[in-house]
Length: 195
Image (cartoon, rainbow, N blue to C red; front, side):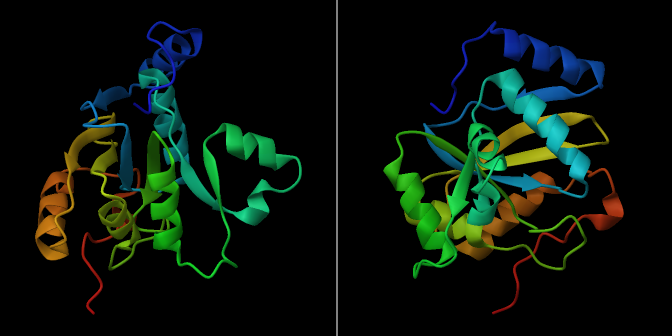
């Protein structure tokens, strides 16, 4: 599994205490396997990072995220890697989805988180890269969320992509219909860009 810390570790206890102090409840439906792509929604504020990272530490899950290679240069590099950062080389000929599918296939365990909106501002469409990298790598999609109305953070369900993206997006939309971000007016519409 992508779980790296045993229950009762000092970091897990401290993170759980902090999460509770700020009024957040951690949620985790156990993953069906050691690899998955997590879609994070809604993402409306930079503050989303704090309950999300405290949740990951509370449940003992080592999350990974993607960053451009420039973020990994200099003194920030070791910190970015320690926090689970995966360096993306935009100069490579392979596109982003192919690069990430290769990374997922090459690892024994990975919990890769992707912000489907790609921004903290309101968007009319989701980016579909998370869907296609999970489909290509043959792993499930974890439905991760921050619900400020209930003060819940975590993973509430998994979806195995079928290749019928329209049907799968209806299931994703149904899951997120009652999740409320810090700034609800900035929540993106859960819809695919017309092709």
